[in-house]
Amino acid sequence: MRSSREQKPTLLWSPHAAGQFAIGTSDKLSIYAFQHGPAAGDEVDFDGAPADDSVGLESLAPRRSEQSVRPVSSVSDVSQLTCATWSPRADQPLTIAIGTATGRMVLHECTPRSAAAAEAPPVREFVPRQQRVCFSLAWNPAFPQLIAAGLDRDRRDYGVLVWDVERQATAFEPALSRTPQGGGGGGGGGG
Image 1 (cartoon, rainbow, N blue to C red):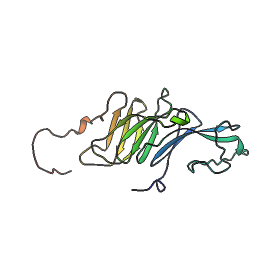
Image 2: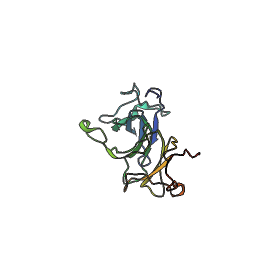
Image 3: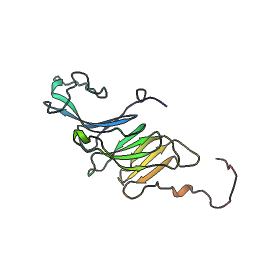
């Protein structure tokens, strides 16, 4: 398995706030707010080196000192983050779904917190029957409570699982590909 230094980071712009973006690595997801204008309070001016090596700011604007990035929230209790996606729901502007190398899909509400409680606790967690890599997540644009997870193929389980994050803790089973009932034992029936 790749180390966090070798893994490509996951980058997401918020669909709800023009200046917010998230950066995910194998062990952490951080949300930042990009701002034009004078720096304020705890903002970091990226004319110098970034504080944690994870975010740098390059711009074509003539006055870099008027641009800044400040941390909003972070999630570090993620084990082996492989993908992430921002919730499309306007009433949940800081909800992010995170997929992991073990197949878990974890929803986090990444609202800004005080420095003492800056971690975003998980809202809900979904686990497939068979442990395998979750390589893709996608929200349904017509039904925003539904999220699909693309998983490594396993002959004992489905490769795409769809969850209703508001109502259930188990994935929908596709009606088209049910296994035949009955017939007992052995066979390794092809496929």
